[in-house]
Image (cartoon, rainbow, N blue to C red):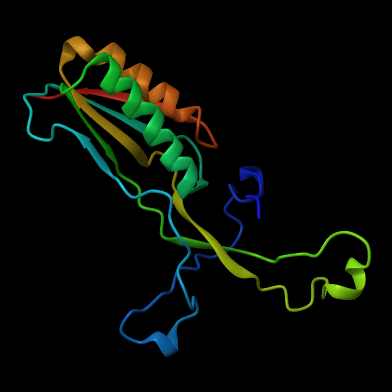
Length: 174
């Protein structure tokens, strides 16, 4: 089944729903955690001689699915690797752990007889997301001051893959 559009899940309207216990499986609200698209959080050379630190900060409260974060990661890392290979460290700060559930609906002829409408509408776990606060950092890049423009462009390209508005904050190290 196709993914629903991000506009249906980006606003934070309800309380967090992420209880999954490995030690007490009978106490779980979530019986099985959905698959996350985001598996790699650190890219580049971690121990380098960097003097610039750039972060992508959220300007509003928003909820991002793991596949949106993965798309942003691919975009930024590909750009950084093509322009300044081995001269950066790129990291995803937010971790998607919020479980998103969806009520599957039957469509087509005779669907009104098959589906239960909105009765029993709790839904099944479909995906995981990260909840962001206003001003929270999502991505960070560490590089040299000569590569500041390239790192800023990489974060700008990554922000175009995410819902909401973002600000790039630059900080000089040392």
